Image (tube, rainbow, N blue to C red; front, side, top):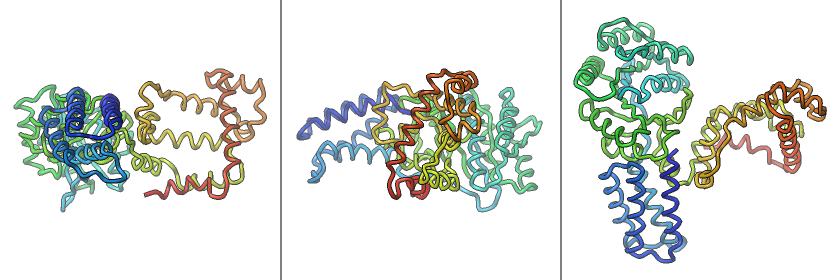
Length: 440
C-alpha cells in the first residue's frame, strides 16, 4: 500500500536527518522535495500546495525541543498536518433515529460498489446488525446476480425486484425491510463509465424518496486524479457524506487517499484492502498517516490479531507451550488464524520500519499454503509426534502435498528450532498471546 509514496518520502527524510542544523533554506529545499514526491504520487496540485504551506508555516521558526532533533520536529509537523489532511478523527457511520437506517452507495462503474456493499453488510453483521442488501443496479448485466452471490456467501439477505426503475425498487425494498425487521438497508446503485445526467437524475430521485442517513461514494484509489475528479462531481450533485477507497492494496501512489477528503471536505469512512469480503477497515487518519510515513500501524495489527485469534485457543496453546507440548496440530491451528489476518505483506507493512526494508523483498504468499498442505498430508500420529518422520514418510508427504522432500526437511527443521526456542522461555514468556488479546 502506497509503496512508491512511502519509499520516496523516506529518502527525503533520510536527507533531512543527515543535516546537523536546519535553516530556513534547508527546510525550503526539503519541502520542495516533498512537493515533488506528492505530485509524482498523483496528489491534487492545490492539495499539495496548501499542505506544504501549512507545514512550512509551522516549521520555520519552530522552537527546538531539547531532546528532539530539528529534523525530527519537521517530520513530526509533516505527520500532524497529514493527519489533518486525511480528516483528523475517524468518522463513524451515522444511524437513523428511526429504523431502518439507509446507506446509499454510489460511484462509477468498476469502482467496486457491489463488492463494497457486501463487505459493509458483513462488517455490520459482525456488529450484531441484520442488514438488507438492495440490488438497485438495473443497468449493468448480471449486477443483481453478483450481489445475490456475494450476499449468500456471507449469510445476508438480499432484495431483488424486477422493476423498471431503480427508485421504485428501492421503495419496495424499504417496505420489505420494515416487514422483516431488517436494518440497515444498503443500496447498491447503478454506475456508469462516466458521469451523465441520466445517472445523476436517478440517484437524486432515490435520495429524495429514501432520505438516506449516509450517501457513500466509492472510489477506485488506483485511478488517482480520476477518482478525485469523480468524487468532486458526485459531491456537487449529491453532497455525499463519506468516501470509500477500494483497491488500496494495489495502490502504490496514494494520490486519491491524500486528495479526496481535502477536495470534498467529506471524511473517508472505510478502506478496502483486499479481495476477500472481510478485507474492509474503518479509516483512521492517524494510522494511515503513520503507514504513509513508514512508521507502521501496530494498533491495526493488534486489532486484526484480536479478531483472528480465538481467546480459548490462545489459552490452550499457552498451556501447551508451558508444558513443551507444541506439535504440528498446534502449528496448523496457528497458521490458519494467521491467514485470517490477511495478506502477509500487508501485515509486515504494519510493523514500524518494515515498509522500507520490504522494497526489494518479494513476500511469498504461497508459502503459508504450502506449509498447510504439508501438515495436512501428515497422519495424526506424524503431526503429534514428528520424531517418526523418517525418509519414506517424508517422501509420501511430499507426494501428497505437491512439494519436495527438501521442503518437508526445511519445515521440520524450523519446527525443531521453534521447540528449542520455546525451551528458553522463562516465567511469563508464553503469556505474550494472552497479553496480545487484552491489548487496547
